[in-house]
Length: 369
Ligand SMILES: Cc1cc2nc3c(=O)[nH]c(=O)nc-3n(C[C@H](O)[C@H](O)[C@H](O)COP(=O)(O)O)c2cc1C
Image (cartoon, rainbow, N blue to C red; front, side, top):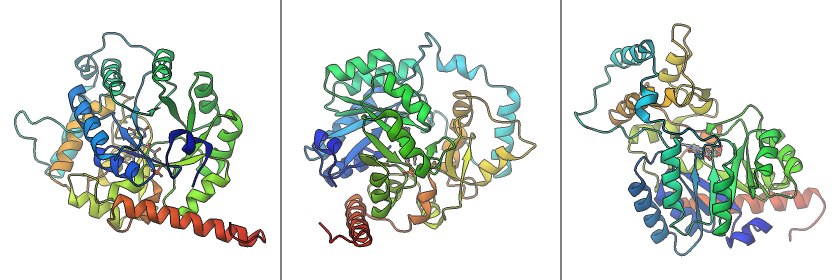
């Protein structure tokens, strides 16, 4: 499964895996794909440095990347405390009511929330980048919006490719104008923040919009046949996020959540602003339903919503409160029915890809290559 981009990066398969877990990223790279570690949940630069070291040690000499949220607009001097102060009391009250209704215990005194998503903040993101550039990353991806020009220049000086996620052709054009090297066209089906256009429509639109820049197809890919479809639509590779969540190497810290993911069908996700304030696909739970209820106060804009619910999400996860327990995940969750190693997942994807190529060749009246 080779494309110009996979050759440029020196990887065996044009399979890119986004994951919040360094062990998963390392295993993806070891298996011949390209592991990309998500940095947004790291608040402390030394924790990110530790996990990048770990990733490097376990990637078996294979290349890997990092995904950061680099704000295009600079917001100087805004601290987490400033943002916290902007959260209305009614919203805090709503969160407490829902937690009380389900009897969710408090975190222990002094116990930090594991879910404070502060990587969007200028100071946090910049610190993460300082750490990232001290490690041998080969690709730097940006989750939301186009990366700032100085960061693109800094990456290019170090020979690091810059990628950015796009949910529309217009986003993709903006990224191209910002000088990035790879566009990840991420469709509506995807886990995490998504736009409103399905992958089948989005990928060829983005390929045309930014040609000759390479595009990775993302959203709803969980089989080799779907990998082949993404490449047939003009992508130079595929970018998967959800599928790794139920791998043996993933560390969800919650057996109940893993069981929920394995049991969920493709219709069991919802695009909700409840987690971060921007529409993000996740498991539908009584928590997302509570926010969709007409009696709810409505979600707050990013980044307020993320800070508002950070402790609540940690408490729900820690105490495995089944009805409320969720995670970002895409519609492909319906195919995630057993815990497998990353290697087994990659082997399955490459085998399925070969099956699809053989099938299409047969349909086209050609024998398999
Ligand atoms: C648990 C989870 C967390 C995610 N967090 C991020 C993130 O921090 N940054 C980012 O660029 N994409 C994030 N994504 C989106 C992935 O990068 C990827 O585009 C998406 O998962 C692809 O669609 P799929 O879920 O159908 O594989 C996340 C996805 C999941 C499932």
